Length: 542
Image (tube, rainbow, N blue to C red):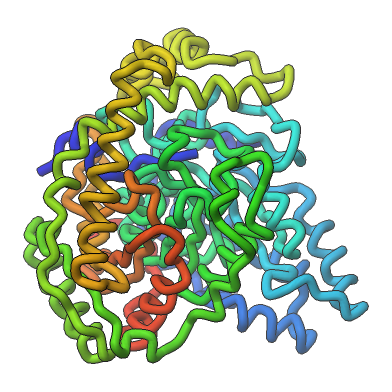
């Protein structure tokens, strides 16, 4: 069993709002007869509809973008802010209906912006939007404060015709505050629940995005990851999650943890929808606000790489060292490997990356340094209504508001980061060099070159654990570290269920190989078709 320090070595920390219904840091009691209290939610008209199906309905005049906004808002009101009280959505965009109406007018005039025209999308609440919604990172220190400009991600989504429906809850400060935190808890939004079993954890830090898109509160959602925080909630909530190569998607206007590891990524109920969302998020590619995007090259149509026969002739390495933490997960993984073989892939089983097992302490050192530095730079760009400007300010705010901000766990990660010096310190420079060497040259790049691999696969994680505010998270296992620390792409696809709780298969590989990974994952998804909607059960039914 992993302890909290192992979390920072293995994953589930994420990189870089008006309160709704008085969201507080307590879990709400279930009410008899409501969804999640012994009964299931009513059938939802748009349950698991794809982007293509929504576009077809709008194109045929059966639905409009305004209809979609109203239907998803109704769904949020029914099971997120009442009923099961998932607490996955922190804020709704008060302008969403107006924006949808304008997009409907454009459609009527024959002016379509692309596949996401009129499609409602939820953004994790560490992604800036210069509108009537705050960007809080889940912290009361930023509650009610508005970003001065859109993040590049938000700007690209608007240009693509997406409707930003609202902001999602997250593990506060993207799970980089305490070594005993509960994933999905924030001072602003309280505890997000897992829609498959409401007493289970949604994993973090993109917990709200994963739970919301799984429970059909929006067509699509966006999360962020530093190490595991897209793929872990995607795993726990039974959806597809993509962590792009660092630099594929601009980080400008996203609350940071790590300059070397942070990225935003799409979360969707299908690989195709994730690819469409990644297209929009990446936009034209290079963004002067984020120098890392200079290496991304021209815009890529990731949906064009999706082919049901993509596994034919593919060489896929099996990271078997990551198996063995749960016998039922192992059984699902073996079935997944059989599906890859049946699709025509050649499996190199096992492959080994021992250097990745030794990188954990170096990674944690890098994150502590980069968080302190990056957060100060980010906060300097917020408006005058934001009174906190440094990590030291946040530490003092939390101490002054201990009853609301630290009722269950502390801020020892903040304290450790505050003790670090500038990025010129020899300790930081050495740790960063070790991270790069151990996960790239001695890790992914080495094994891919040695075996001529198209991708590597491993378990995304175990089934969701029972949320525990006393001891914190109970991570089982996973395989996020190699891609996270190297800055390389990874994605997870639903692979099976353990007692009704979803688990996923992760595909990852060298830098800038998102298109190939998406193609392989799509072929796997089409051959297995594991995804099924959550039932909002109060607990696991054995």
